[in-house]
Length: 415
Image (cartoon, rainbow, N blue to C red; front, side, top):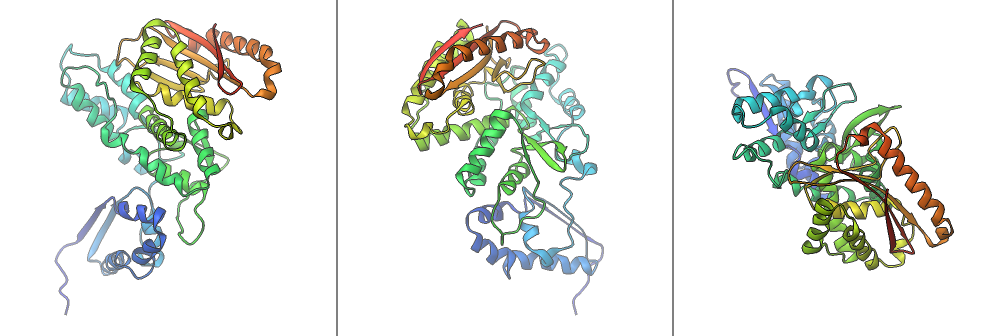
């Protein structure tokens, strides 16, 4: 006769689905063997379910990256509730700003060494922005990034030149894995939307079914569950997803750089990138940036220019600019006058003399007759941006209209 233990058992499992996420994306048959059919993972959770039913296991709590594993076991473990989107548990997933302030004051703060408000203001752009519910709640800071930053900052109270934990930076590979299963047009659409338009609308997949085709919504949902997208708001029962913060934006740009290198043979030469960044920071000029972009475009074949437009030009330029932490880079920042294509503002990590707003135009050969009109319209757009309250407050701002045409010919005008 089985002996019933005295007291209750609590089972806590962290990242319960880490290994099965890999299988779900790349080896579905093996995934079914160990999870969905009569495999050992299913048997493990079935045993927990039995003991919960007998009252031996009183509480079960599991954290994971996605709900893939438990979803796939159906009746094998149908006693679990997914609380990912529950407002009441939202703050378990990160630090509130009050908690960040308390952490700073309680650990590294020394009177007069630095201004807490200024440091938090800088951290907000890099590490804040996560939201796991459509309800109106406070956005959260990424705990791993906060702890990593503070451990570096406490040494001499200066911002580290690398604002992101190396373990997080390598997560750009997750983007590759999540998107690689999709048709190429779907994966490119997702990347274009989130990097150049800053948001994408989708349903959220609450249960994953490995018996049906993997969809665009599934991929977007996996990006969300992995922290690579976050909830902005509910739009008529669809979710508007956005990139949560500047560190995660860097992951997308790193993903794009690796993609360009692999597909087109593009090489981002360190010395040339340093020269163009130095020119931006110290001289207030864009000559080298434009020339470097031209060189990359020359590598692309005629086939690559089918469907090429301003979004692709912007993505290309963002992959170059994101090689430095000197600037916070915003794409399509909203102002009352519209949305500047690219805005570069001082990140406070290095000394920066100039900040920038770029308006980008790409004209295919069929549209060259409209060059003068497009040039005039671009200049007027930049003038309106400069007059907006959001842009006026930016010190030492340089504004440029940059036009590409005939594939890789270019001109730029300071406005």
